[in-house]
Image (cartoon, rainbow over all chains, first blue to last red):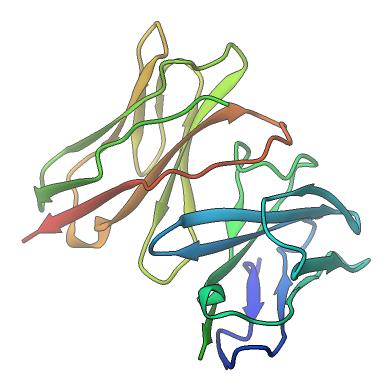
Length: 116
Length: 111
């Protein structure tokens, strides 16, 4: 069974631009969560989707948004990029309906975003 | 949500058993203890989960005392490839509470 895939793996953008990241969960997994990881802040939860609905959201500004498609694939978008958005963006999928990492979550390799 | 406290870093040597302890004094009745492992530039990987006493799988053991206010992840006979960050999470299964990941424990295995 293929794991969680994320595209692209690396991305370089400039301030003010926008970016869209993609995540394909493990087949059969309907819950997809997004995280931002930086050396200073660690792993921070962005949002979680289940059956195309956002069920949970972290404390990030509205510039960060996401969506989930009927095939459970998910995208996250960051508009008006800032230098501080440089991070590893991780996607995780879960078989259970809760989408909680207290149940086993399967993480993708991440997208490394650099904002110049 | 139960807050967890782990050592920031630990060193050990190949072939040794490594024990990482996590404190969670305000763990709730329905909370489970979950450990993830993360290698550099990769997403975390689920290692083990438990509720009480002892849980063992092919990669690790998890020891939980009766009061459940702490837990210990045990890695038998570590190798260099076990160098990673280990996260301890405590929370209720199936909860939709926003998760807060701590800094984890950076484990460095030396030859």
